[in-house]
Length: 229
Image 1: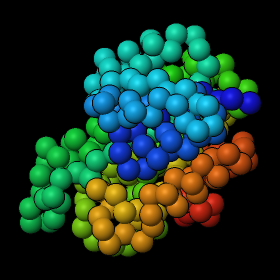
Image 2: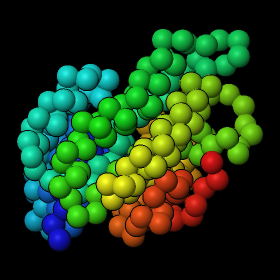
Image 3: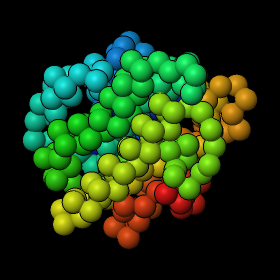
């Protein structure tokens, strides 16, 4: 069945490649980007998918509501909360950028909840709605590693938000999962990262496709492994 997929942070990196893959699969993709020009050339994938571009800064509650309003009563099968920020260059014990930390919480934690709740009526129209938030293993409480206070805390909080959403939306038949995309060679991940954008995005698509209610509320990686919280 042709799906309608909403992807935030779709202008570059993993988000952009996810847009391309779902277009190539013939799906309808709603790409939320701060700069719509970044993806306009992807109007049609090789599989006949259709692209709808929406100007979206996930920090802006009004922009999120406009995204939802533009959908009207139309179905959304899959929401991928991909937009994210690192939280600034100063995240050490001795030098913390508190404004950047607040921004990381706004983008990485609050925004996935805001976008999800805004689109709940549309997701409710789908036969098996899925809500995916790309977080990070750096937010796992089972990992002991220093630094990156802003990034780690915002992703840990996002993981918990998704876990609670999964519980609250179970009765509505909605599948909710946080996913770790791997350490990916993007602007955020840097050139020394171990995974290509292509491998990460393709792995995510494959895992998302096979998620069912039994997998909801669990933390998954791009290659299908379950990650400890």
